[in-house]
Length: 98
Image 1 (tube, rainbow, N blue to C red):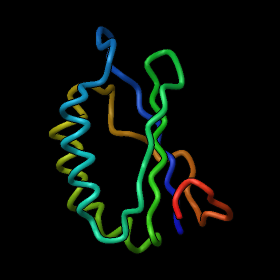
Image 2: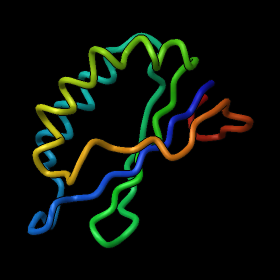
Image 3: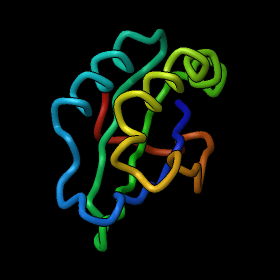
Image 4: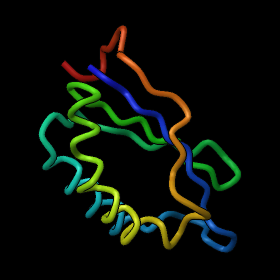
């Protein structure tokens, strides 16, 4: 299993993420082959950390050209810029998804 950890920043004046847009994007992500799940965490000061789990890096890379334009359409309007990948790699242990 492969994980990609991204950090994003809400624009000034945006107190809460647009849940409808996030739900629509999550549904699109779930439709991608190899997607195992994800979680977003409020890490304070308008920052959001998202952990995405995939069967492999190849699956994540294959989904990127499909998901990126949808992320730009649905999520980017409330962010200061595209989410930044801060960490990525092979999952060594996991008791969240089985």
